[in-house]
Amino acid sequence: MLAEVHREHGVRLVTGSRAVEVLRERGRTVGVRLATGRVVPADAVLAGVGARPNTEWLAGSGVPVGDGVDCDVCLYAGDDVWAAGDVASWPDAVSGERLRVEHRINATEQGQAVARNILAGRASATAFRTVPYFWSDQYGLRVQVYGRTRGADAVHVVDGSTRQRRFTAVYVRDGHVVGALGIGMFRPLRALRELVAAHAPWPAPHAEAAVLDRRG
Ligand SMILES: Cc1cc2nc3c(=O)[nH]c(=O)nc-3n(C[C@H](O)[C@H](O)[C@H](O)COP(=O)(O)OP(=O)(O)OC[C@H]3O[C@@H](n4cnc5c(N)ncnc54)[C@H](O)[C@@H]3O)c2cc1C
Picture 1 (cartoon, helix red, strand yellow):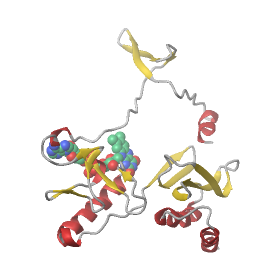
Picture 2: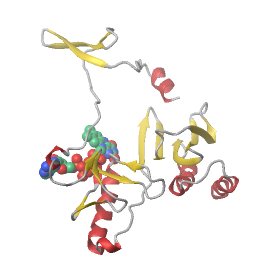
Picture 3: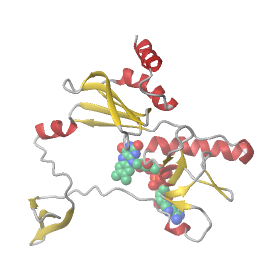
Picture 4: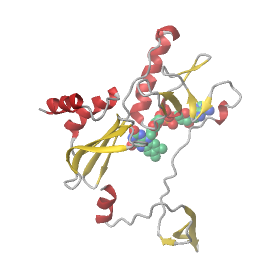
């Protein structure tokens, strides 16, 4: 649906094709060559290449490093080392899935959680619990996501419809809600956040009824 919205606004999407070279002539950018050999003409090129945690400097220090600093559920990495923010990888307290989140709210929440745990002491440290959240405005549509959508094996529209471009949907993996997405529907989405937080079974008549109750 979002691809359709972008196309309507004149965006040409080329997916599944790696960019291999930025082409320049007389000091000016003229295009991008794709792995297929196709050349896409361009006056300017903006590259979004993702990010990776800066952990090379920890090599040999004893701090466990995998995809970031490997922590336990309390964000503790051993030997009085704690991690928070983009660099921290930790097992989700509910699903057990190892997470690493690159969003500002997560960095803030984890910084606070680590500070609390350091003050409480290792023996009283508590698991970091969160429902990752981000939003994005695209051509007047507000897209909001709680939890994880990647790796889901089913998506169910709960309210509204994709045709109206106003809906909420749950993302389900192995029969449990792992994420929720809303477009132009904040309040119904807030209700679904609780299902994500609880890793609630889906379909679950009582869970759906609870959502409907809260929506009033
Ligand atoms: C272009 C861009 C746009 C973004 N937009 C959004 C957005 O709209 N919304 C959102 O929620 N998030 C956004 N993010 C992500 C957000 O910026 C990060 O999630 C957040 O900054 C993470 O905070 P942090 O403290 O974990 O890491 P950082 O902010 O990366 O801070 C880590 C600091 O550690 C320093 N450092 C690294 N190695 C060492 C070392 N060896 N010794 C000392 N210091 C070191 C670095 O220089 C850096 O200052 C964006 C990120 C980028 C790059």
